[in-house]
Every structure is written in C-alpha cells, then in structure tokens.
Image (cartoon, rainbow, N blue to C red; front, side, top):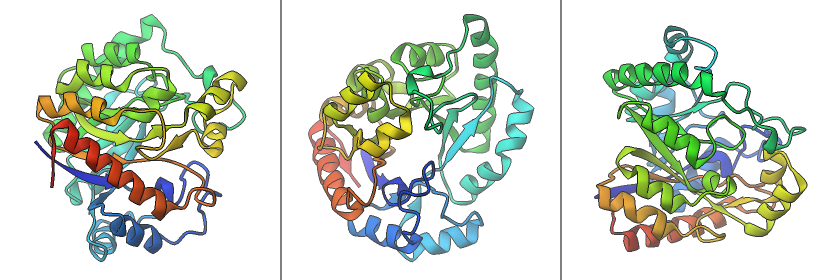
Length: 298
C-alpha cells in the first residue's frame, strides 16, 4: 500500500481565473512544488502540450506528470464524438505515462460562471441517466484498453456533485470507471468524505486532497455565491487548515489497497496564500495523515 504525493499547479496559477497567479512563471511553480516535497504534478494551462517538451521541463525539476483535467460532454454527444474530442489530451497522457485521466462531466456546468450561484448547477433528469451511464461505461472500457483509466471527478457546479449522484454513477457503470475522490468538493457539497470513501474505496483510482474553511463555506452557502467567488474568498485550503479529517478519509483506501497518488489540490489566491508556504504545510499534513491511515509513502 505505497502511495505517492503530488500536487496541482492551481495553487500557483488558476486556470479558471487567469488573473490569479497569471504572472507566476511555470518554472517557479515547478521548482517550488519540488521544494515542498512533491514528486508529481498534474497539468495546468501553462504547461507545454508537446510530450517531449513537457517531459523535459518536468524532468528538470524531478517531477512526473500524474494526470490532467478533461471536461467531457457525454450528456450531449455519443462515445465516438467524445473519443474524438479527447484524443489529443489522451495522447498526451499516454505519452507521459499517466495511468489515469481526471475526467469530469462538464456539460452545462456553472463552475466557471462567476455570476451564477453554484446552487443553480445543472441536475440530470431521471430519464437522462440510463443513456449517460451507458456511454460512460463504454467509454471507460475503451479507455482501460488504451491504458489510461477514467478517474471520474465529482465537482461543484456540475451534474455529479453529491454523494447520491456518485452512488448512482458508480452503481450503474463497470469497474473501468474509477472514482476520483475529492475531499474538498465533497465537504463543499455537504457530504462526508470518509463515508464516500468507505462505500467506494474499491473504485477509487485517484485522490485530490484539499481542505475547506468552514467559516467561508458557511458564508458561501448563506450568500448563494458562485463557485469562483467562493474560491477567491478562500473556501479551499491545503490539508490541515480546515475541517476535513484526512486520516478518516484515507483509512478506507488504505484498507482497500489503494496504491496511487494523493494530490494536494487547493485553489487559492496566491497573493493571499503564499503557494510554497501552503504547499509545504499541505505536504506535511497529508503525509502524516497517510501514515496514520496505514499507508507507506514512496
């Protein structure tokens, strides 16, 4: 049960809000990620999309590419169209040796719409689910054959946000559809990350570890904020700086034999939350929680 600790560049430069960290050079992000103790990183918009160039820039800092975000629209297009849309991204994941792809259903999402309350997210009608699950299952089987498995990312503002929606998605798809367990998005949605981990540890193939500041969350919910307004206000932070019990969330994964990456992913305003300082704190807390949960950190 050896795991590895990685990070996401969103603490240094935010892809959804380019003004957050927009002037931070990629080299600074990579150097500080390594200084904080991480050995892997997920792809951000500032990263090269050419495999050789990407491997070279990461290699200079002793980092591996772990995965990268892909926003799908399976509610509105068939599997063949989705494969065509994802092909360049999948090719990059394959070329860089990634075993999983961060995969979210982003059709009609409000996650990037700053003027829309996250509470006004899209919700799938009952009659939509069978076709969606069939397409997702077939795509999961195809991607498994390609060597890069789906790590399905439940996400605030999308059609898969709650524990009940995660249950329905995983109950209706084959094991080729893995779950990306995101502690911060579950906490934001009012769910218990440990409870979801206990139910679905056998399907988890990737982990995003971020914490939630309960005071900011309470204001976001009370004020019907957009997702991005909540992020700017500091709803998310690194492990150990909020309300999530990471040992409890990770223990079911250790018991199930999870052997993948744990990714510190905490989008904040880098002008208010110094990235290297928070990255170091997040790495230290997550490593301690992983040890307490029964993992060995490689």
